[in-house]
Image (cartoon, rainbow, N blue to C red; front, side):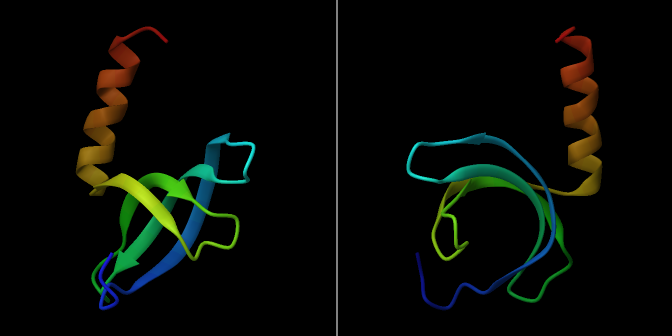
Amino acid sequence: MSDSLKFEIRQNLGSISETTTGWKKELNLISWNGREPKYDLRDWSADHKKMGKGVTLSLEELRELKKLLNTMGI
């Protein structure tokens, strides 16, 4: 990851899993490089200094994902 990448976790919305090493898959509202915050799902170390690969979604994209999940009947 580039050292020039800046982020601010504006709101932690919850975690969906945790590994034995303490990493959590979290849904957060994050501002990347000072931009408008987006919804972000990825793995984080316990101190939030390290992160894994993830997906970042706008509110509209998150709503569409919710619609898709609702059709799956899970």
